[in-house]
Length: 288
Image (cartoon, rainbow, N blue to C red):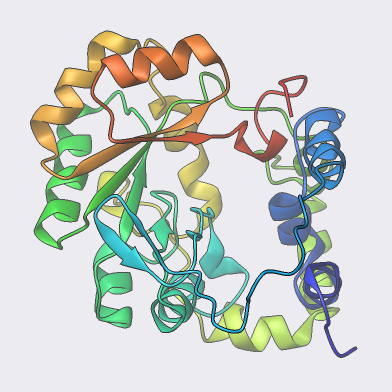
């Protein structure tokens, strides 16, 4: 198929990567109602069209958080992108740089922040959650600062991990059933281009940014217990000062859905807001 739009690229991805990975990146939590509403409600938005306006010379350039960009767009953080394509985060960063827009790297990326910055040759934005291990969190912030990351996307819309039924069915949620290796082997055999591109030539398959905190982990599955146990669900507005003390760049609050929270974020001195419900991947039933 020759892709013409985003839906076509989604279909190509569905064919190309193993089902367990496609369902992880494509799915939402619980019944996926919020995920569906995100798309359906966005489609209802109509654009105002004015006529008889000179559009012979137009530009989409703008300035965001002190950075000049070619389009009013930022590539959002995507966890495990390096499992969908060979060193996927580096590929995405190179594409973003070529297009003149920022990429925000997920803290749960396969490629660590050092590899991505080196690969694209330019500073990137960095995304991070509040971790219980403040010492390691401080190390991550120091690494991002040393590499010149100008913006931190501090994500707060994950008070508890979402339950994704697709992941449970596919065994991605920590299932150790005896038949799981057989299912995954079949998933790989039926997606041989992915096996060659990613499984054989895209290693190492670890969460690069957090690998030093889990030194014994050899594969993605072995990181999940640490990740699930590290999210600090005691996070409140009182923790913001600690973030500011350990990160000198601009900080945006990612995951705002309520007007009162937006006002509080302004009072707390954030440089920007990302209105987001985490793509419907964590708390189902949230507003679209």
